[in-house]
Amino acid sequence: MSNHQGAGDRLIAAYKDSVTRTVTVGGDRIAFRDLGPRTGIPVVFFTHLSANLDNWDPRVVDGIAAQRRVITVDYRGVGGSTGAVRDSVEAMADDAVAFIRALGLDRVDILGFSLGGMIAQSLALRYPELVRKLVLAGTGPAGGDGIQNVTGIATRDLGRALLTFQDPKVFLFFTRTVNGKRSAREFLARLKERTAGRDRTITFRGYRAQLKAIHRWGLQKPDDLSVIRQPVLAVNGDNDRMVPTVNTEDLARRIPGSELIIYPDAGHGGIFQHHRSFVTQALEFLGR
Image (cartoon, rainbow, N blue to C red):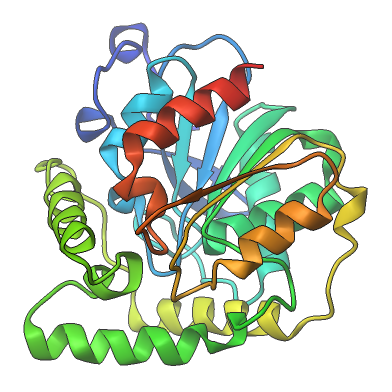
């Protein structure tokens, strides 16, 4: 591993100041950031379509990292990671496992948001020994309702954003209510708090590969989620346009003993809009 964590930067207080490191996995360099206490089971964060390390809400990362070691990671070929972007969720999950093992970890908790939640499911189904607990946010099961429509929705809102000089996440992640619009502005401002050492934007080719992976996931035959034995917390907003909220409810129904939180007047980015509640509830769930 390069840029190994030294004693001097173990107590970095904020995600915006955390160092981007790399570890070699299968010949490619995988970029990640690592903060919080060194004890206990780490929480690995898997991110959404087109996202890099800078797309995590610093309030969510810092909130969890106040009590838990948090590791955020760029998928292969995205941001600071080299290689080709995978075009299937299963291949991304295999990469995630190789990354976790390259860090010398044999058991982790996972927070998977959107595409990251699909990767988390695939990983838990095929490598159950690696996973202690799962937080699945703004995501849905293979073959889930409307997931194959993500490409169309994302493309439409990308066009809308370009025409109105706005960030697509304004439309994709938040409701169009007064509260939703204010939350979107606050969230986008938080994403800009990191000013030095920012991550690289995904290439269009990489974005297309990820869209293909999500489309395939939406068309797949459903997995038997009853075999997931790990504790699961399923979270979403009540008005998710990207991965319809019924998918989160479906996950909670099909995974034995799972817990469900649906935030009011919130969209796909419900965990960012309701970050205070989410951090409290996630820490309580992970700490049990």
